[in-house]
Length: 80
Ligand SMILES: [Zn+2]
Image (cartoon, rainbow, N blue to C red; front, side):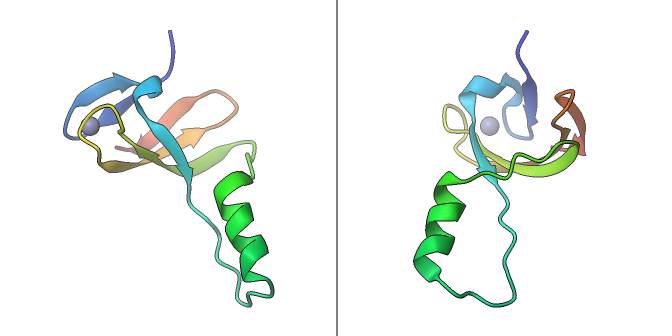
């Protein structure tokens, strides 16, 4: 069984209905704006452990939700 996310509008839905969006860490000083944009779009840090994530319910209500998930176990820790 795949991971299910709890959308406040649609209820529990399979993760395949969502698009992942990592919350970027904004540096104090931006040296190269192009490199920053490429990193933001294509490079996910994929840390191990608890992580706050944004998911877009593309095949549902088309709203963003915030999820706190342990990336080691896929266990949802709170949030939506
Ligand atoms: Zn939804």
